[in-house]
Every structure is written in structure tokens, then in C-alpha cells.
Image (cartoon, rainbow, N blue to C red; front, top):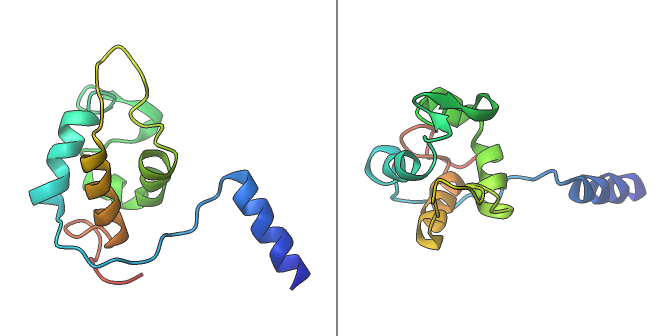
Length: 114
């Protein structure tokens, strides 16, 4: 038990993120999320530039990096960064991305509990 507490504390301190609780959602990739990514993310993560090898136009890459996206966009809110591109992700869009990821990314993921 003591080891579990120590490991859990270390992971929290180190910034590792456990998956949030599953939440059923009606949001889908095509209808709700793709446009948000196209307007706020692909300048650096798609088309002509692929920062950190993360192409947010490639559905396979998004699926493989859902929890990284969750951690940086939702938890830490460090994406998009402050920059000269004048990109500002709204709280409403963050809430949509949060709900979509917590719903296991319908349209890319399974949409079923994990």
C-alpha cells in the first residue's frame, strides 16, 4: 500500500496524467472537433508544419496522442501557446475537446468506455 501511495504521488508530481473518467458524448470528430483543430492547431500541427511530429489532420496520429492532447490542451492549457499567430482557443472549444476526448473520441476512437 505504501509503495502504491509513493508511486501515485511521484506520477502526479512528475505530471503524468491518468485518463479522466469516461463521459458519453454526442460530439463527433467530423461534426464538432475537426473544425476546431483546423482553425486553431494546424498552423503548427498540420499542412506545411508539423511541430513535435504531431499532425492534427491525421486521424491515426490524433488517436495515438489523445491523452497528450488532453494533457496539453485541457489540463495544462499550454496549447495553443502565446505566439504571434493570434490563435486563441476559446473555453467553449476547450470544453468540446474535453467532452469529446472523455467520450473516447467518437469518429476517431471507439466512443465507448475505456
